Image (tube, rainbow, N blue to C red; front, side):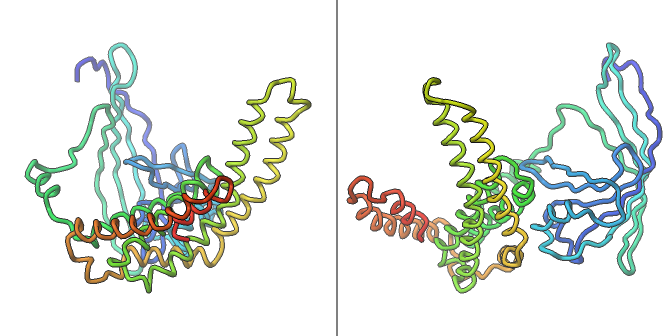
Length: 353
């Protein structure tokens, strides 16, 4: 490699990691990882949660014998309350080499792992291999293996059931992934989780010709409940933003005393109460049952006959039907005089109650 002046060897690291999952591997099935690792600079418990794209968020906890409650709660939307047990043990002898530029600085890092893996399940197997990873800027992978594969992928007709399920599964993934963020009170997480609830509800109602409403109506009811429970925290967030903007917009001579400080104190008190309501909802049996129902919906969807027909025809008909329903509700709403609850009428029309 041009500009390389030396190859620097780091000391050998011995890593020992035990990976935990449910009996049916719900964590790995949702691209999440929970492990207890000794050795290396970051020994302890690691929970890796997928983020949009190829990145991950890692949450760490101190080294203990049992799974820390904090990580167990953050994984709850994926495990759905199932027991976490050791499934695989991986021991690695890691050798790291750095390619150093002639003017200083690391150009690339090569890690070579001698890996020994052992299944911790009954009649589990073992394996061993060497693994090399080169980290360097500018490496990318093509989405398609060939131009022909891309053409066939983009031109293939898609059944309505496949199209609807793709959207439903994506919203289920979003809702599940936001659970840890809501528990940790991350900015905008409650709002985004409520949006996922609304989108799922709307999709399940709109495409009743594709998914059997005898199954989906109960799920829609639970999604409405969850969004309502999260609503108290979201309302507090919105109200605080409006009050803060309102105070800042006032002339300075009209703002007497520590108004901002009192506003912050009020928000902390009210915010703690509303956040606890969200936590209570996420820790309830009804929420766990909803997660089970959503998992079953994605894995064993209650498809109807129209699910096998062309997506463009089935979905266009459903959208036009929804537009007609919305137009019928909007007409009387728009005739209402100012101040008589127009926003509520419009929301009822859009959300369908």
